[in-house]
Image 1 (cartoon, chains in turn brown, green):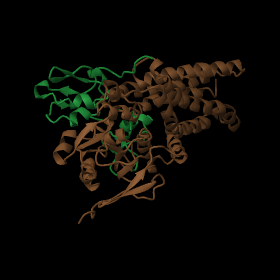
Image 2 (cartoon, helix red, strand yellow):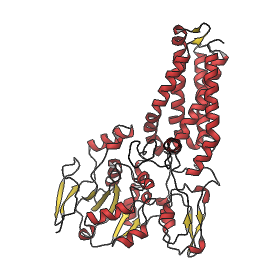
Image 3 (cartoon, one colour):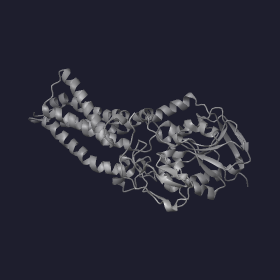
Image 4 (cartoon, chains in turn purple, red):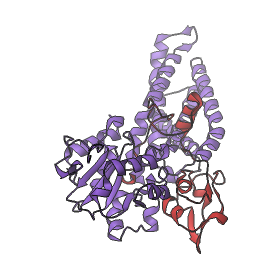
Length: 356
Length: 111
């Protein structure tokens, strides 16, 4: 019986503005333009708020007024991905086929395989796509390719995968050129803007580590002559806390933003340099402000910022667009022993600073 | 702006030109221009730029490309030491995921 196995996305989702009636159920209609609510939602997830529940229903959507010759564009059910796609399609008509990636963006989901061949084939069938369009092309974002076996989709359905451009912003040009991507459209970049939008979530991710380090630093600050003094802990605490958060800032904000200009190819090297620069600047300002630190405390602060920022930036490898698994493994074998040694030595120096 | 490039001579990418039929899929899916057409077959033109995403391998219908794919993510590698899983992205607590920090909302354009 027609429609019995068809699961259409819900019509009561806030961005749905209508429905197209088909023998296989109602297809939700969505606009290309984003509303204020869409933009506010996107801003929040950039800070890590509700990131894993920012989803849309998987299935087929109608953008504008598509007919049987309109292109089919495949996306993920992370609303940020879905919105990045539709906002580029102002004035166009298209079918949007949303795969269930459990709220994960296209590239990451492709790496996991949830944006994958099986899910694509299933959705093509459950959306009754062959009834909706007369052509045989599904446009899959290029960054979905790590999960999608294009030749196999052609074998298992009547549809052929055409890989679209890396960036949704290039989609209009790609479609207008008869679904041809220029070499430039096929290259992933990591521009200053790309890096800047990723800084907040990166810093928030590592905030907890910095907070624990700060707490440990405060507790250790009381050790010195007479074993433990609360007054000494309170006196030295501000420097310990500042050091932890300066290392966080250097490793997760300064280094990612300055990435191309920092020396070295390893992220841990770039982070170490950012940490050293931050330490030099911070300690310079502190000395100008008349703050006298003992040599041991001074060395502890500088060393910790280098090691901490190095570790923080190393964790930015996963956020970046160009690191390989075996490269990162090699980097970690070199960098982690040094980072751990640096942190241990910095801790010992900070404790020694209670005496000297 | 200086070019961003990661370590050279570390990736596991292998290409068997004898099996290549010139279908061009690898040149379409690679986000770093590792493959280019050389006559009627593909050729590896920039091996050092490979990030081991595996897009070329899964889209090669002729078994000409092999790469030990994975996520170049230090946090995911650290997480894999503790749970013994493979290195991949994904939110912690996801039943099928051995991931670490979770997915990163990559630059708005890429998805």
